[in-house]
Amino acid sequence: MATETIEVTGHILDSLLLPKILDTILEAGCDYEILDVSIGKTNVDPSRAVIAVTGDDEVLGPVLDDLQVHGANRTVQPDATLVPAERDGVLPAGFYSTTNLPGEVRVGGRWLPIENPEMDCGLVVRGDRAVTVPMHRVKAGDMVVVGSDGVRVAAPSKPRDTQVFEFMGSEVSSEKPKGLLVARVADRLRAARERGGKILVVAGPAVVHTGGGPELARMVEAGWVDVLFAGNGFATHDIESNVLGTSLGVSVEEGTPTEGGHANHLRVVNEVRRHGSIAAAVEAGYVTGGVMRALVEKGVPFVLAGSIRDDGPLPDVITDTVAAADAMREHLAGVQVALMLASTLHAIATGNCLPAGVETFCVDINQAVVTKLADRGSHQALGIVTDVGLFIRELADELMGQP
Image 1 (tube, rainbow, N blue to C red):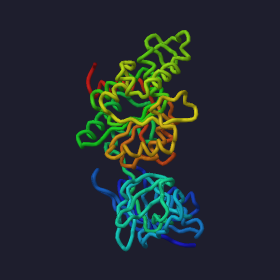
Image 2: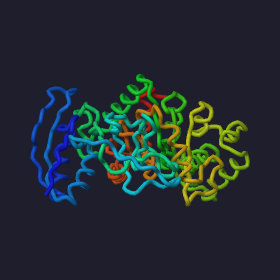
Image 3: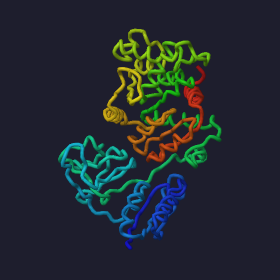
Image 4: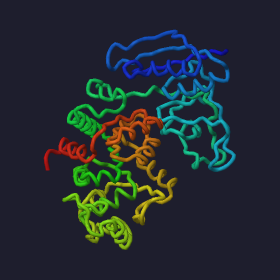
């Protein structure tokens, strides 16, 4: 049996973080003793707990690694072990796999802040800088952190107005007043804008199918979207709905199928390909409305990531998924709020790249979507289970008033 002492600091009680840590220890077959605990007196005061964890040698190490995801760190830390990468795109065996929490690396007795927290990356030290690097971007000779020694992370935090977001107790809810939630999300967007932060929207095709496209376009035009991530489907059906008045061949006004409508999206993709790009199609007057037109005319950047099932695809779609993820990373600096709108795969992909400090709201009619997002490490994701079209309409009205 071996014993290690860990420390966790932050809002560890009202977020139920401390119980999660203790449950993780017991579920692994280890034991614990709380050596010291101090409780913050106000909403802004952090709490702190020091815990001795005891277990078999072969179990204790993995448990401590799991606890670090929750911001629990060893109290005594040596310098990190650095091993050079031998080949491009290959990390050394035993590399430290990063979380999306803010953290530090101990090198030469100094703690270096991790500059760009992102989960599932390697951790590379370059002089007095520590950066997360996706596996495919590692270069031969990069000094990579191996093992978890010399790495500490901060406990995850969540919005402090717990009475407003009490519905997030289980991270998702379908039984709370949506008007209140929409108003609070709007408040978050306003606060981010006042701080000079950017707003990221991740949109799935259901945004268009449910009639939310025009409202999202209104938000773009009013400056409430700074960058958009989506796939071929969203952009295609947004353009289809504005050029042909259908979405997946169904009339957006009457909700009824149109004759030959099953091919409408293909015809739209074909014509945009003929123009060479979405921007060229907008400039030529082929696309006269919708989210994609608004993005082009406002100069708002967007990344369309492809998949194996795409029709066409549109010429702007990045079909190399690794290149698409890299393109997404290029637009994340300064993002403070992310809206995940009816998108499962793109939401998870984006969540994988976001630091934990980015407020993330996942809106979907399917409760499992936000659950999947949280299960894959995006613990900051807060879920609202509702029709995405209605949500966007209410959010646009809250931000800008009735059109």
